[in-house]
Image (cartoon, rainbow, N blue to C red):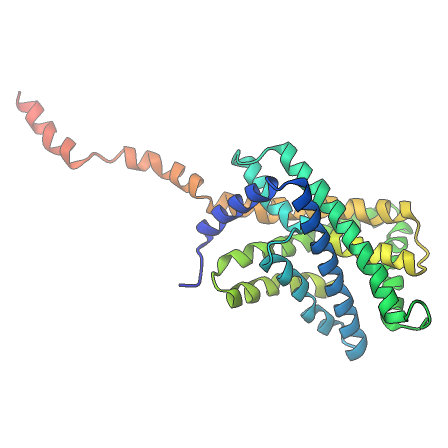
Length: 289
């Protein structure tokens, strides 16, 4: 059978979280670099598809290719780890320190990978600045400004909105990482993880790693966005919202309802209260003596 039951999936989530927390700095950086750059590839692919077809949904349909590559190659995506490593910490298979260390180095790798891709992409599609009206470049600039200045003008409501969008985003993104564990075949994994990733991107929710590319890329290309505006009005609240959405709605809730430890613990009192056959036979004999 290709299908993996939810109880087994939760156990795999814990094991995967422990393995990620145990990664060395070099591997976390390299895998984070590749994860960030590959997701940036997928983002420009989605923008290109939307521009060519005039249908944003087409962009959302192709965007999951980046996520699929990252998962199948065992690379790092910090937003996916938000649902996995905390469970390993909860099960005492990883420490809080190792979790935070993984998050830090992987995020650093994401940032470097995204910025490197941003530079290469600009050189490729504009011939080193000789083509100024490239539609995808203009889309990135506009998106970067919307994701920062668009929230800034709303003040606190803007922060609340971006946080909520980040929670909803990573609820789906972490489900994508988990859904890949529900199948054993490569085809099954691809189909399973495609669904939630399409769902988040099509609705314009906020993903921290996508924004690590879009916003600094927009700044490089000429967007009216400051460094402080990037981090205050988007990157920090999105990271926090992604963490909350992943750890609560995917990690903890799936753990609570499907954990084998929880189910076995709940069954113990029932098993202990049922007398064995030996006890039933021995009881009358003891009574006769």
